[in-house]
Length: 398
Image 1 (cartoon, rainbow, N blue to C red):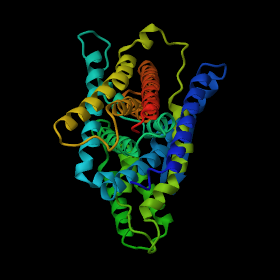
Image 2: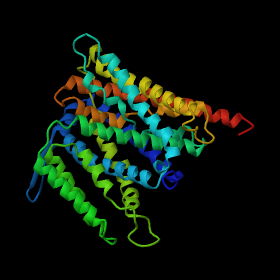
Image 3: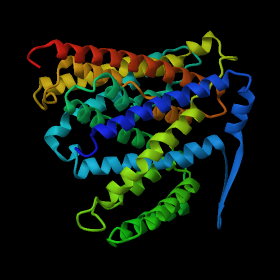
Image 4: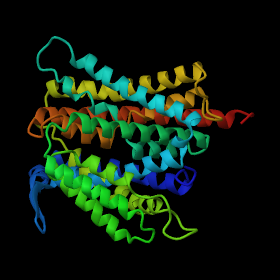
């Protein structure tokens, strides 16, 4: 874990967060400009990929969502495995607080969303409850790096661990809720590919290219099977070995994690944000701005996340099942709870799955809710953390 929480890493995440915000803002501006038609035609543009017997034609948006985002989930899976085996998640005593806080941060938004979308009136969309459940790691870490660079390092460890557990839960929800049917033969092919990657790990000097080929094979079979390709990324990461190819060198998993992180942070996530965040205000009325999906997602991210995370952490600490991170204060934990309401990338991704892409009204409301809830969370969270840092600077005991 110590290797991951470095100043250079935080600077990378801070820059990545700014690029993500720029990409999302650019998408919204283009979608409401004279180039609106060009933007949406680009997203719908069909693109065919053929590799031997494998042929698939998808739109640009779907290739980004089902193709490139699988690499993002691969990196998330690598981070999860690293933390479970060697990092913060390997210590049960340190694990309790962020894990239970993450669970609270998943239950809280879901309950808030359902409270808005489970009334007797018609037109409500309760199926969107998973949308505000996830936390965006890149944005949350970036906001903390900007607002509280001098706060105790253990707060960064806590936030990153919480976000990783949160992402693991989100991946589980994707697999459980958004796989309505699958093809057995293609799924078997994906499992055979995973087994091959696992056997490859027994060859200490196996070329990295073979792992890449194995990942593509697993991804291709998973895509054809009808199961979310996000699971292909996480499953492939689980069989990557931690041992180094040569003594004294970083492990294979660490090499992949460090090597792919810049491409994910500066290319894949911004491209997904550019493709997924754009929506036009032209056909949006008050019924959309204040529609049940938009209100449920925004309230879930802003109110549900902070209440779920903070109350769960408070109860765990109160019952002495865990302690506050060393040097951390309650107000700083509350600031982190607010940052957990930044659900941007993951929430947009789940929103693409929760509602049909042909349901333009629901998709627009998802985007409105995600943007509004995430903006409110990052603004409030950074304000609280910046105030907490100034307070520390004025405290002679610190």
